[in-house]
Length: 245
Ligand SMILES: NC(=O)C1=CN([C@@H]2O[C@H](COP(=O)(O)OP(=O)(O)OC[C@H]3O[C@@H](n4cnc5c(N)ncnc54)[C@H](O)[C@@H]3O)[C@@H](O)[C@H]2O)[C@H](O)CC1
Ligand SMILES: [K+]
Image: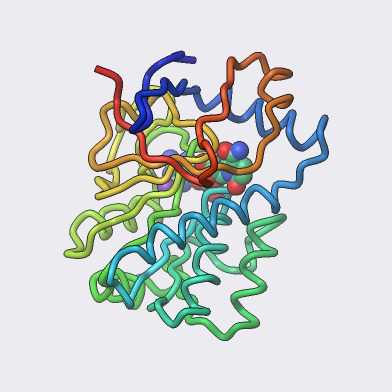
C-alpha cells in the first residue's frame, strides 16, 4: 500500500493498493461480509457507462475478457445498449467459456440481442468493430493480469492501440501490471482509466486521466483487510484523482 499516492481535487490523500491487497479486500467483502461480486460489478459497470456517456460517442465498442474486469465491461455494455450508444461487444473467447458473474452479465446481453463478436473465432469482424468504433471501452484484463498478454487478448490490445478512437480502461489499462505499472508486452494507452474502489499502485505512471469509482465496499472490510481507509468519495459515486507530487 502507498498511503498517499493520489489526491482528490480537494487535496485529500487517497491510498493506492497492490493487486494482492485489492484481491484480499474482494475476498473479505464476499466471504466475511456477504457482499456479492455481482453487486460490486454492477456498480463498476454503471459508473463506467456514466463516464463513457460523458463523451459524444455513439458507436462504442466494449472489449471484454472472461474475468471480473470483463464482467464490469459487460454490465457497462448493457447500459450503453439501452441508450443506443453501443456498436458491439468483442470477447477474447467463446461465450460458452464464461462462468460465474461475468457469465450472468453476458447472458443478459445475449437476451437483449446485442451484437457479440468472439474474436477467437472471428478475428476479422472483431478488428473491424474496434477500428470502426468512436470510443473503445477496455475491459479485457484488470488486476488479474499474469505476464505478457498472450493469444487473442494480446491481439485485441494491439488492435485497441492502433485504433483511431480513444480508449477508456476499466480498473487498469489492459496489459499494465496493476501493482508495478510495468508492461511485459503490449498494453492499452488509454485517454482515461476508471479504477475501482481504490487506485492501484501501478497507476501512478499510467497514460491519461484517472477516476475512481465507489463499489459500495464497507469501511469495515478495509479494516478487516488491514488497509488504512478513509472514504474518498464525499457525496459522489466517483472521484477524479491526480498523482501526488
Ligand atoms: N473490489 C474490486 O475491485 C472488484 C473488482 N472487480 C473487477 O475484477 C477484476 C479482477 O478480476 P479477475 O477475474 O481476478 O481478473 P481479471 O478480469 O483482471 O483478469 C483475468 C482474465 O484475464 C486473463 N488473463 C490474465 N493474464 C493474461 C495474459 N497474460 N494474457 C491473456 N489473458 C490473460 C485470464 O485468462 C482471465 O480471463 C478487477 O480488475 C476489477 O475490474 C470485480 O468485478 C468486482 C470487485
Ligand atoms: K482493463
